[in-house]
Length: 176
Image (cartoon, rainbow, N blue to C red):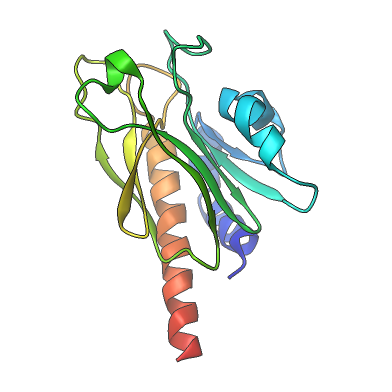
């Protein structure tokens, strides 16, 4: 499966959503994603020259944004797979900022990707939505740079993830 082609197809048919999405970046069109804490502090060391960033997804907390106490979250889709860093999905996530799962999943090991429910954390500030990779909850990733989630970012990401999952299923059917 060609993740770049899937992203380009979704971006072309949903260009209005992508242009209004506050925390989704087309890596070919902009390098703003390189200023995000997850990219600067974690991914810039992980990526090698062969990795081709396609799409960066991840917002920041408006009040805690770049403070060291805040565990940054994000996701970078590359030609080879998906890098991700999540916040632990717990009632106290808005107080203790516990790290959730972090890692890389190769496109060859990817079966499905989707967005789950919104956080159930203490307080009224939005902390993120669950990210499910291969039907397993990895943790929370923010789809906003503000106090509440960004509908455009959520809809675009969900559409992208559905297309990735559909492409994986179609590829699996074609091989059988």
